[in-house]
Image (cartoon, one colour):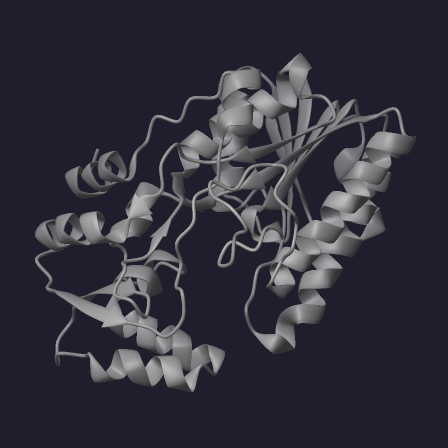
Amino acid sequence: MKYLVTGSAGRIGDLACRQLVDDGHEVRGFDLHASGFEHEAYSEVLGPLHDPAAAGTACEGIDSVIHLGAFMSWKPEEVGQMFRSNVEGTRIVLDAAQAAGSKRFVFASSGEVYPENAPRYLPLDEDHPRLPNSPYGATKLLGEELVRFYARTKPMETVILRFSHTQRASEIIDRDSFFSGPRFFLRRKIEQQDAFGNRAAADIFRAADPGHEALVLCCNEDGCAFQMDITDARDMVTGILLAANHPAAANRIYNLGCNDPVDFEAFLPKLSDKLGLPVVRVNLPGPGVLYHTSNARIRSELGFEPEWTIDRMLEDATSGS
């Protein structure tokens, strides 16, 4: 089989390319940036997703497309770029895959198509109303509709995967990580909120600063610690490859993520013990982040079983294995 992986330089795309090559397949990457992966069975096309010429070259001779490439931002000035990459880019890659005669197209959507911070019920399953409350979620919802249109009107099989939040284990302890830095480290959280222009939130966190590096335990206005899904990138790749190859996945939609949400109340003391940093508790206005997305469908239909709990990820990150 010959696979195209878009977003091949990303945390998940890079792992997916390497796993496919290890499994004996020929792989082509498509990204703005080179992945640094070198193998006789691997090649790359560099360019933006919304470039029809680059997309056409990337899809030529491809049996199955794994479309992971996307642009994510919370900055108002970058919303237009998100729509170009995530909506127009998805349409162009779909067109190129169809023209190339690709047999299956796997689309990486997101749990942000749901209202994760205001769910109607928990756990969120694939039948939950799609009501995104972020521009990124809106781009992924529109991407899904494009994929569903192709599933209805074209012979190419499609699979939609709604991704959990994803991390490599090493990112959990990395202050400079784009996601885990501001999630767990107080001063990175302050920097993030200042960058977003969220002055009120930044001031709340700033008032809790003890004057030295610390971890932050975010809680809602009632003092309930945040809970959310965090899935290891290795488990995500396992699910992606099942979606790309399993006969039962054709034209299906799946939530892809961990079995259980991460309870920050339980996890932060473990992170504190490993890093030797104190934990500062901060209550924020509103209901906070308290959600879990069900992976029951992909487990029952495709046999997906995640292996990397948050505790195992932390052990992996701190043991150097």
